[in-house]
Image 1 (cartoon, helix red, strand yellow):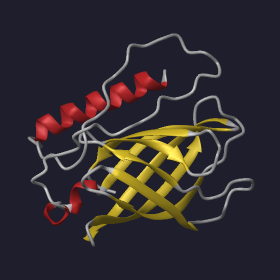
Image 2 (tube, rainbow, N blue to C red; image 1 turned 180 degrees about the vertical axis):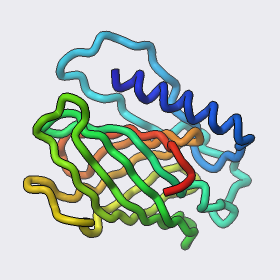
Image 3 (spheres, rainbow, N blue to C red; image 1 turned 120 degrees about the horizontal axis):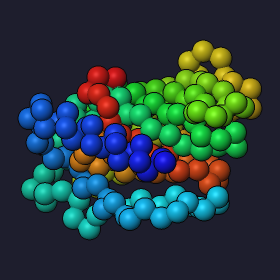
Amino acid sequence: MKRLFVLMMIVLLLVGAAACGRTSVYYVNPPTPQPQQAEAPAAQPPEVKPTEAPISPDLLPQDVDPAVFVGTYKGYYENNSGDMLLTVYIYDAQVFEGEVVMAGEFEFEPGAGNTEGKSGLYRIEGTLDPVTGYVYMSGVSWRGSQPSGYEMLDFYGYMYENGYFAGDFVRDYKTFFEMIKVSDIA
């Protein structure tokens, strides 16, 4: 079900990008979709790895337009209470010493059927390697009140050419996240 959601989001993004005539490439290619198998209750999410050849070797970090990383990314992750909906807003991105330094917000809320989850929002800061697409983001401060039993999570992963962003949280919650860029506006 989650893979179907991600595939639908990718199709919507590609249709929107085609309609806008966007063809710029700044980071790695998306992973190749695998055939669907019946989900086991304790199935682990797939490991996300960058491709062998991330981008054109002619593209140097100082050539990257950091504005391509600004936008709204939507997806999901799981925690002890169940499925959680995730929105990451990247509202600032600048090239500094060969990396893209980014700032934004991490918003979470319970998904369908999750009656125990809570909602929250916190500021994040981090970096993106424009050659590999590797991202590392850290929680900075809560916006509003911190939900009881929740803490800010640092996370890392890879951003792909089509707006797909996937990875893991730093703490060992055995939690995997997947997002797709849905807007160029944060």
